Length: 246
View 1 (cartoon, rainbow, N blue to C red):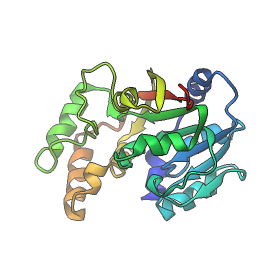
View 2 (view 1 turned 135 degrees about the horizontal axis):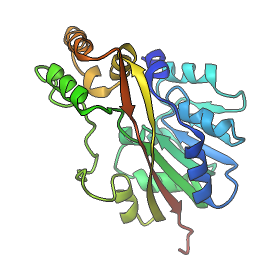
View 3 (view 1 turned 30 degrees about the vertical axis):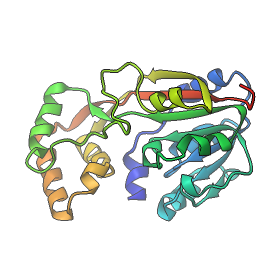
View 4 (view 1 turned 180 degrees about the horizontal axis):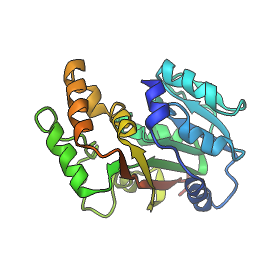
């Protein structure tokens, strides 16, 4: 799975780094990454001079990350909940990983890892077929086995609401202020094989029994053109750690 994640999940471009650092309003020298996976976002920050500590609970993911990131990246095999307060960072961020963390105590733990005035960033967003007709064909193909492959909002925020999760939680948190939400447009093409490879990393499909999952993928491949347009806009949530007297 780690190899498939690295091969088929899209990476992140310079605009994300610029968005985070512009919001920070000062140089970002140190960062802690939560759920780093194979290091796609790790590379973005580390290659631009940020001293990144990448945390990831899965050993196979972390092994893949270590093959691909700059040598200065520090790695820690741990879930977010197992990180112990001590060192603090100018930036704590999660890329397509925050929804795996436990809600209880999430923001107090996050705040304990940040310097006063430090920045929290959450990056995520669905990878979707850009052509509605192709999307509908895929939906019909998987329907007998899987109604939806969407990741629902962890706090139940409806999709039409302007502020989405985790911005909704950050706005209610006593630890954070200046909550912002911005969207970075991301468009590209994939082959049919690559798109199914991406689906093989999505939790809705991973939860299916192996024979059923293979059957679903066979049905999807049959309705896909050779190449597909992808809309994979990145939603970025940013917030600033409040000082003790804020």
